[in-house]
Image (cartoon, rainbow, N blue to C red; front, side, top):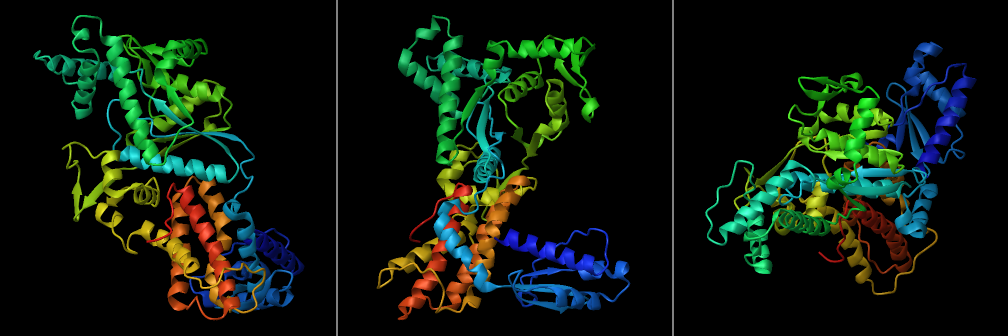
Length: 544
């Protein structure tokens, strides 16, 4: 609704400006004044017209104001302020219609067909199945899944994808590590090389294998069994942790499948045939500098082994073959230099390099008792996703991880995350929902939803209504700019305007008609809070 009002106002202002003798088209921008006494929206167009019309901006503003049809533009009034600002006060009665729109559309409020059902692939987490998920994966999971939910809200056909790194050298080291621990269980002295994995999960896997097959693989060929068992065990644990974090994937794509199908070999042959590669120092290089990379990249090393970049090219060629209109990769902070070479790879396998966007997640520090902690108290190792879920809970983690822009470093304050007070941002938003639920529970008479507002002072709901109106545009902005933290900010803002109203007004009174009108509005607030939290993978609470 608000977009249509502002578009109509902009068109009307442009028409007035042309009548005043301005021939060029000017883009008119609206700002939301920090002080509500200056209106709901404001523009500085009069000051920008000073040089063109050779007039004082205040005179220009007053002329525009005199020609403006308030009723047609759903305005209560328009005021000239300062050096020529035009301040617009929207028609509150007209805006109140948004309440009935929300009550009718429910969780579909804010949904749109902006994406026109285009297929979009979001790849995130993509951890090596060699151990537990850590805090970086946690941030990437929260971001990627929230972004996917937001894209679905605005009409995209979204596929969440996890690339399983089960074909590289790390799996070989994992397999050898498990077998060494298996031997150790039978009293055999072992030596772990520098590439070995030392996590407690490796010992757990070895014990499980011993329990199932006893000493069988001390005497038989063991490699494939240990490899498959280890990868599947760790992958299942990874899937469980992600599910507990409210994250599920549509596709688990195996790197190994690229080798087994011959896709990696075919991709290499294709790149060579097209002249995109060259040989130097007994290695095969890809010409990535053509697409802005700082240097060309090695595909095949001098010893004949492949770099990890090579299967990645085959993997993205596979993504393109599945008909996605857009690709989004969420990668760790150490992949910043990967963007240019990935765009080059997309171009060389026949895609548009602008088809892919790479989002880099920055580092997270965990803070407790005012100090940074790097190790899990339980294991003495790096902090894992499971540690955080058990310590803090999914709702607080999801909200806090998404609340900051992915491109900024963040501190995760564990003390704040578990605090049952308004200082905790997710508690603050969930408490708004719970407070409204409590109002409905405490009603003496059954709630009757109204279809008009006759008994309340609608001006007291001004901030709530304006905030509800902003929701559809917030969702579009979060999707188009890939910034789900905007939804967090919105949820906090809506909770804030509700709490302010709740603290200032007695809502349940003896006036039944007035109470029903108030609760009709607050029911709309509750619907939007729940939907915003759902986009963030966060639940609501009926009581707190």
